[in-house]
Image (cartoon, rainbow, N blue to C red; front, side, top):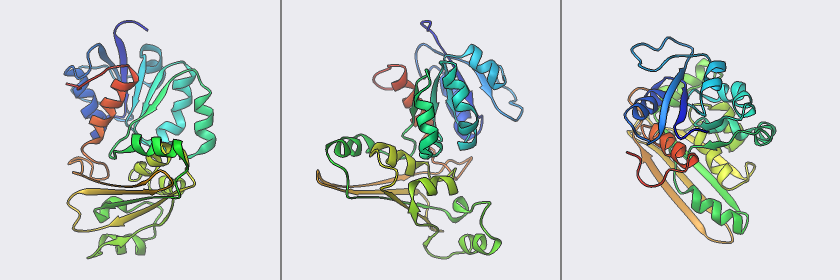
Length: 263
């Protein structure tokens, strides 16, 4: 790899656009944004829009900001070509067979922490001894939790609720599959504790939720932990938190060996 790291952004929505703009502004020294990959037309960009095959050819690292489906469809091609991959749609890795295949490929991959923190502590505690229980409760505005697979009656019930309403209760793998753009946090926690079967998830629709709240509770032989994170939703996409693109940039910095504050 040359001294200048050539980067490409996959997905030019609310997350990808911010990541691209920050890289163009010099957020990471020695990283040059050379490609944007998106299914729509990217207007007014100084960076060439390419297809994924071309991006793999010209980039050293690809930054996924496009959703779980894109990870499922393209991660193996990226990593198989020996390119590095930063994954923001962590929920795609809830599939154990899929992540096993990815780990066998020559490229490096690193998942962003996204909208949640404390994962290093949870990881250290789980290394010492398996947790007894781990739960993730995510509270969002009702419209952010409505999914295409829901019946019209269920969707209306969620949208019209006047108080906090539990939308789902179950394991992290199922939660990430059913809520692919809303519960990547669940998979991030399950990867941190190295136990996807242990983590239980409860998304809650709350019309008064001005902030997106994630409550992570873990109890085990080493200690008991409770984190509450409250993020402002992205003004462009309320299904995700405004902090996510900056978490993606920090993850990229870690992958490339940068230290200290990202400008």
